[in-house]
Image 1: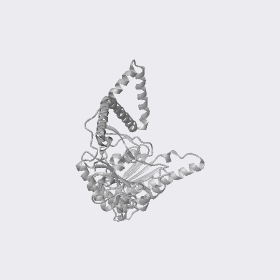
Image 2 (image 1 turned 135 degrees about the horizontal axis):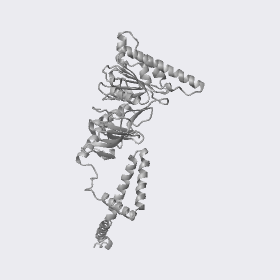
Image 3 (image 1 turned 180 degrees about the vertical axis):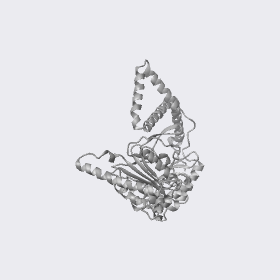
Image 4 (image 1 turned 30 degrees about the horizontal axis):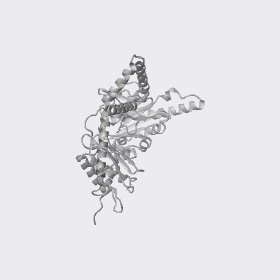
Length: 456
C-alpha cells in the first residue's frame, strides 16, 4: 500500500516556525539597540530614586526637616534662574545616563562551584536532624536537592555564608530549646567559627533565618552622649532590634550608632542594674562610664571592692559624695544611703499628703555604684561585722520612688555570693566579655539570641 504524503502545513511547519522565531529575535534585538539610550536613562532614574530613598531612610528624624528645607531651597533657586529648569533637566538626564550605564559583566545567577559545595555540605549535615523515616516526601534526604531547603542564600567576599534562609519540616520540634541549640551549634560550626550569628526562628512558616552580624566598633571613646535625664548608655549594639541611633565621634569619623539605653527614674520598670563578667571584661569600665553620665544630673556614691584604685579619678569631683575602698567606710556610706532613702520617702510622702510638690532635695538622683561587693562580704564575715550587701535592701526595695539607683558589678564566679535582695531587685542585667550560653542564661534568665564568639 502506498503511503499518503503528509499535509503541506505539517511537512514544512517546523521550517516556518524556526524562520518566525529568527525574525522575532532579530526584531527584538533591533528594538533593543534603538531603545538602548531610553533603557539606560530609565535604569539610571530608577537607581537615583533608590539612592534618594535610601538616603532619606538613613537620615535621622531630627535632621529630615533641615534636609527638606535644603532641597526646597535648591529647587527654588533653579526655578528662578534663566533656563534653570532646562539645565536641571539636562543635568538630570546626564546623571541618569551615567548611573544607568552597564557596569561590567552581569553576576552569575547561581552560586559557583565552591559555594555550591558549601551548601551541599550544610544540607547533608542537617539531614540527620530534619529527616524522618516515616516522611513520604522528605525535604531532607541524603543526596537530595539542597535548593528546595535553602530558598535564599548569600555569600561574603571570602566565599563564606553571610545570609541563609533554611526551610525545615513541620514535625521538627522547634519549640524545644535543646533541639534549637543543636541546630544553632551545627550551623555555627559549618558556616565558619569566629563569627557572631543572629538566628531567627519562624515557627509559623517553618523557616530559620541565619544572618552574620558585623563586628561592633571597639574604638568608641567616652563622650557626651545625646540623651535625656534618666537615660544611661550602656553600650552599642546591632541594628536588629534597636531603631534609635546616637551621633557618635570615633576616630576621625562621625556616625549614628544604635545604642543600648537603660532608663531609670520614677517610671522605670528596671530601676537597678547588675553587671557580671569575667576578670578583665570591663565591668569597672562600665561603672566609670555610668558614673560620668550620672554626674551630669545627680550625686554618686562609689564603693570599690576590688581595691585597684580605678575610681581615684572621680575623687573630689562635684557630685561625688564618697569613693570608699575599705570596709569601715563602705559600711558608713551604705548606712547613710539607706537612711537617705528613708528620709526621701518620708519627705515625699508628707509633701504629697499636704498637696505640695516633692522637695527639691528628693528629686535629685542618687546613684550607689558598687564594684565587687562580694569582696567586702568575705571581709565582714572574717571580722564578724555586718555584710555591706544587707544595707542595700532599703535602696533596692524603695529606691525608685526616692530617685535612688543601685548598680552592682561583680565577676561571674562570685555571682553565688550575691544576696537574694540584690539578685531579685536588679532586673536590668548586663553580661560582659566571653561567656557560655549557660552562663548568659543563668544571669539574664533567657538564652542568648546570637551564637557566642571566642573574642568579644
